[in-house]
Length: 82
Image 1: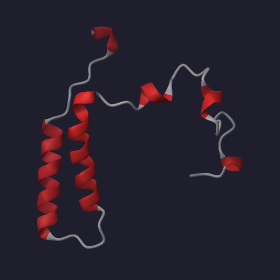
Image 2 (image 1 turned 90 degrees about the vertical axis):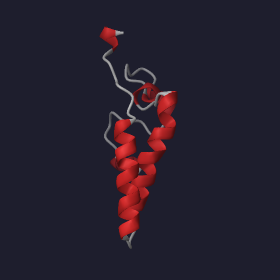
Image 3 (image 1 turned 120 degrees about the horizontal axis):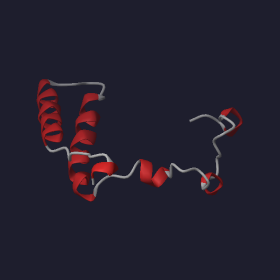
Image 4 (image 1 turned 180 degrees about the vertical axis):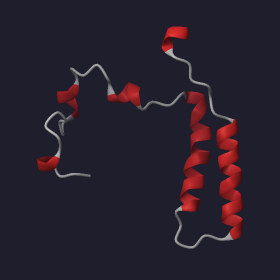
């Protein structure tokens, strides 16, 4: 993370100063409640893949988790269609 002196001038280091933005950070990065368990599969796969020592069974486990993650993704529709 950049020190406060190197942050762009449009970004505040205090969350309450950005309340006038139309893009609320909480809305921007929120997960659907049904997707939390699936998201943990992605996190687990990434944790396996970034290890210093990666074994064959770790690769197989990460592949399985990624396949499950991709097959269980919740479709996202534009708000105009809802």
